[in-house]
Amino acid sequence: MMANWKIIPPGILIALALLISACGVPLLKAENPLIKADTALPETDIPPTYPPTEILFPTVSPEQTPETEEARSQDMITITLVFDNYPYKPGLETAWGFSAFITYQDQNVLFDTGATGNLLLKNMAALGINPTQIQNVVLSHEHSDHTGGMQALVSAGADPKVYLPPSFSAEFKNYYGRQVELIEVSPGMKIIDRMYTIGEMSGPPPEQALVIDTTKGLVVITGCAHPGIEDIVLKAKQEFKEDIYLVLGGFHLGNASASQINEIIKEFNRIGVKYVAPCHCTGEQAISKFRNAFGEDFIQVGVGKVIEIEN
Image (cartoon, rainbow, N blue to C red):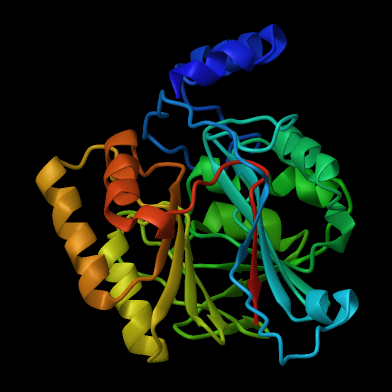
């Protein structure tokens, strides 16, 4: 890996140095003072940049007739990371927080909104996502690094249905209830075709995860996994009675011991998780351990990463 630094242009090295130094700053404040702040500290290490799109994982035998590009794209579930503290696609900005834009056919969901609206909208614009096109927002929990972009979205013309755990504060509900339609979730509630909430799980803070039902198995997307990432994954498998294909998002293991992380990896293996894509608050030690344990089934992610799942 060290030999590669010799061929990287100086401008990119400077940009990487700035990104690394930026990760040491405190958590960005929410743009709306009603939104609760997260007390977690940002990570300091930055992973390398990889090509932005990963397809999980279509195979076409010689006997099969190739589909048209339009038909294939209609059948894809596409997950695009639009906010994260890890970089991935050059030209996008990072900050402590998380947001993922998920599309299927003509429907879409924005899962969490990151910490700051300006950065969220800037990254979305660079990725060709118009805020007025967002139909649904699913908020995992009431921490500012997951809800901080809400006001900017609404101000930019978004008029989504917003799905949130019942435990969200009265202040949050009163403030946004005057601007958008708020829906309190229950376990297994359908958001759009093939996408469901796992329902509110105890924290602290209480949190929901998004479950995508694909022909290959379940995709579980978490914001911070405060209730415990292994408990969330197990509940998804038990509730929807399908295998777990991919777990993506924050695993909240930054302060976990090596033995605790090893036990969670064992539980993932016992549950039968196929692919993992940890980011945000997972922590460098945990990310490294998941990478070593899952090998080729580990997916490096960050801002701008696109995962396409052929359905």
